[in-house]
Length: 225
Image (tube, rainbow, N blue to C red; front, top):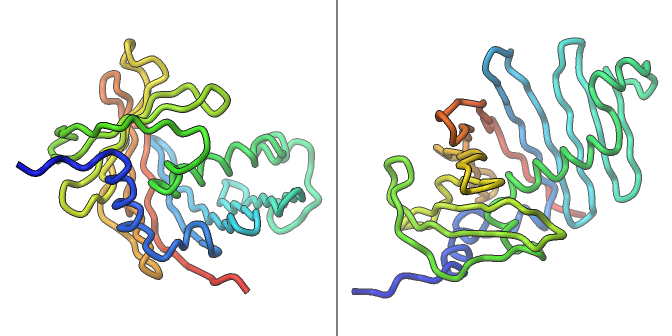
């Protein structure tokens, strides 16, 4: 019987499957998303990032039009319906501030750069992979924790047995309480050989409560000059 690959080998193979040209770290990537939530309308977001040049922006449709937030190295900017002049009420309602922008940047980059983000400093990959059934799909399970300065959550990532595609993940704040969420990935969208999940569905571990869905509509890649 062949020896199972190590966790590091699985992650490396998955990174080559999803991003063989290094687009996520070397180029400008533009993702167009629909992010429906239970009881709410469709929410269209356009996320643009270039990690090499420390750029991130988020444009999102809202009930009164659209909002835009951008970080270009240490420079921050915000607009509402195309104008950088807007009321305090609008700023508070849509959280147009540095703290929210930082939160959104970390959220989108972590999720959409998986499994590349598993190389980040402070990431502790447990060396042994296990064979697990993840909601009807057989895969390798890898446990990931983080140094205290990075995070306290416990994560499990699941990879296809054949091509090492990332098929889902889950996290816990306190695993003994079965809290946290699990995320199911389905289908793919491709751009410049970059492969990202087309559909991401979120559920709570407790009662399998459905929380929402992220639908990737398109990927655009722009090479750096």
